[in-house]
Length: 402
Image (cartoon, rainbow, N blue to C red):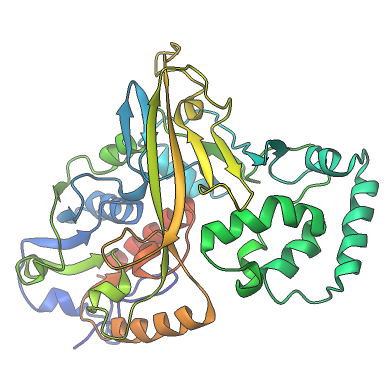
């Protein structure tokens, strides 16, 4: 009997039509769950299963836990080693869950854009419109945007460029969106789908808070500390490549929760799914304040990096005891095309790749007692809170089905 355990939106299966869980009838194994990947999805699933009395083993290919939210102390500063991560959510259940494992500070994401030395407010709001056009009222800003949209002749946006112009006009598109986006995705904006930018915050007020979320902040002490607390009391092994040691590890547990790349699991047998990768150039500087903000986006096409992160400002330049931190650490981010062996970051969810992903998901449906979850396992872009929510639902559904 086979159990369909792949659910592309984070829901879980686990019970066969007759109500019995197949893996529970096969063998008496050492663990109930083998979780492949110690990032947010894996750690959330593992914690939920362990809290339900299940025996769990977590393994990770990297030599550390926490996946891409991994933070590491450098000169007393919690450095986001795989790019900036600001936790934000409107989901009270998710917020209550993460607060079991960390205290969150009151950090609010207010990035700025640097276009050839001109500084603009992000998200796009009245500060941005005033700087760009000299307008003072929301009515004036709307009039400029609508005029530029009409001049571009856009009725139904067919690509990212047209969607952006319809939202904020051609001036802002040219200065603050086009160069940054094409660096980030390695493709012309006219070749990118419109949906990528539909979530772009555009406000006719002076609200600089990038995320329209009720709850927001950074875990005090860093994300690694938070994930470590999530995995407290659970057996964890790092530096283990599941796919290279599959025969040894998949026999240890009744169910495998796999959060690695979907196409890699199947040996790229149908071809490679495309991702965007990111390279980070980290510097420790003697100055106490390099750019005055946690995140500065470089939106011109000529600057090779997409943004610079100054990590100390995620914690207001102070340590956990509230003392000023001397020096600073910055990371320049360079977006690049992914190749096998690189770290995959962002799925390229265009029509071609989504069709290929669907074919891989059809293979995944046939895998016995394997749950595919998370950004890579589902080939889906996830915010952190959505990852946790999906893992909570998956774990609860699977456990309750037994």
